[in-house]
Length: 331
Image 1 (cartoon, rainbow, N blue to C red):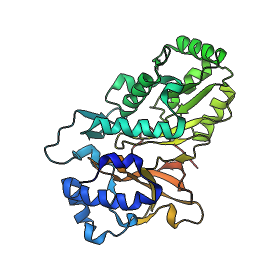
Image 2: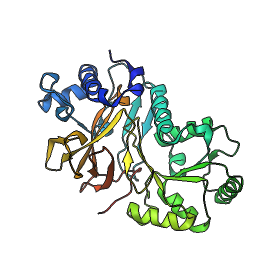
Image 3: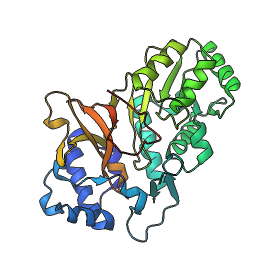
């Protein structure tokens, strides 16, 4: 049995061996994944490194329950999707594992939540419910323990007053919001922010014309005076997130790794170890926190992977579903 507690204390040089251990564990425990691995000719005896691990297409979460048999899931996260679109469902058998993952990741990139007043601007996600993003931000708000921390649905006047007061008091603030809501808000309320970290999670939800991330960040910088807009990259099917401190260059926590595959060959997979210059491809993700579902997922995002392990999202595969947590990027 893999020691779950060791996942978040992992050292960089331990990642590949632990990933292979989790692959063998999930092959034995998760019937859907075992069947997929067998059908692709990638059982454990043929997998010697992380490049040869079979990556489950993320679309399986729309039609299959990706857990071990008879495991109960006290929490089920659902993807946002648009009207009429089939949604993904992530059956989370250990919500504490998700909490440990996002709190450890937040700590790695931003420090303790109690250092901030944390504000959430996620109207469509709050209205829908069953959102992993709302679950995460709600816990961050709780742990911030600041009187003004909270969700701000459409009460923009109140959010404006809180931001102004925090700036006047030099209170470190983190505002995390879905892209269309941030653009709506800052079109109405322009201000000069110095003590606020602004994090966009992507997503127009059909409310606005699609923009590139660069265009979004330019608009938000002009409205706030900030030199950098932060970004979060996560999804229903993952229990971990990548974060970008500026210009959409994402970095993963130590227990998560992004690779790329060739668009015309799903078995041609590269991770940073094999790169000497930036390379483009389709996203594969290893999320060791997904130990009770599947840690090895093939995503339909296009990305540039850099030799230091950072990555930038470039767009979506043709005919892929538009995801709620990503912009419709263009190159």
